[in-house]
Length: 138
Image (cartoon, rainbow, N blue to C red; front, top):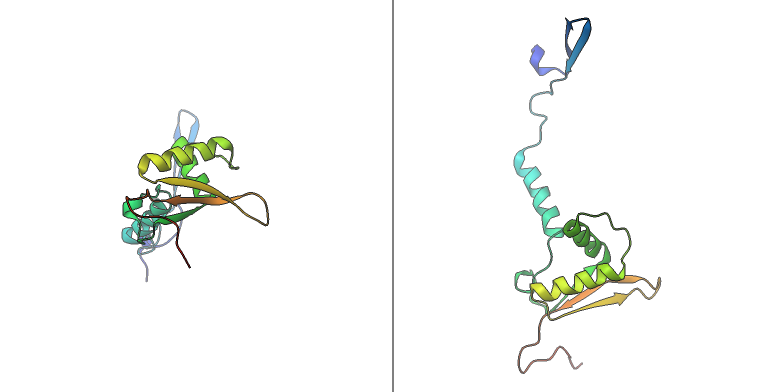
């Protein structure tokens, strides 16, 4: 049998203070229902990684290019400017290009979606090293 503090029954405290009724309702949660802090931390960490500007040396792959989808570009812009921008404008593009160069990318190129004609995202490329080229021969 569950104790009173283990149920979801509403507890109410009613007092009359100078002809004003103060009603306080407390709804305790069942023991063990709360999420464990590690799972919440993992979710927040994953969300934070998606909203962090990509840095060339810290990428999981060793490729010299990284594609950033347009949704991520907007999310990064909104996070940085504390706005709720819905569309990619020239201001968003120029900010993203400048930010990419600032964190160490050599080039930022916005690529169009051939079906819609809108921007699909931005390709970030690492700076070229002496004697190397981004061009590959097939």
